[in-house]
Length: 118
Image 1 (cartoon, rainbow, N blue to C red):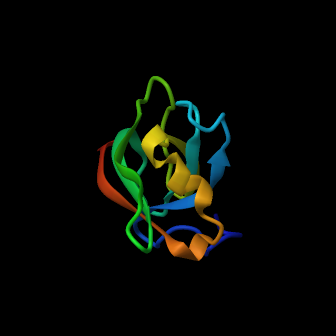
Image 2 (image 1 turned 90 degrees about the vertical axis):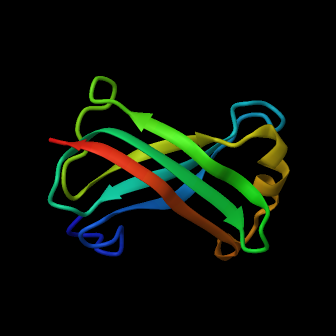
């Protein structure tokens, strides 16, 4: 993290869209891939978050999509580290997702974020 200060937000948790996992269009295996960046001084576990993603003209790709990382399956998100997060793009939103050719025309946000401090 010290070599990539542009990642995340100081004293906060943020996400960055990194790409997509291409399954077959029209199937339930197309995923938007993000990294979750912990720039706080807290170690976190049992993380539950929701993410929304849309085009700047309002076409929805993800609408409060849930993501859970338990301590048993992931471990602990230590301070100044990142973890990947994969969100399945609903079939009805895949056409919008695949039509994006300029990432400056996409917005995304963390809508909710709960965790246990470690």
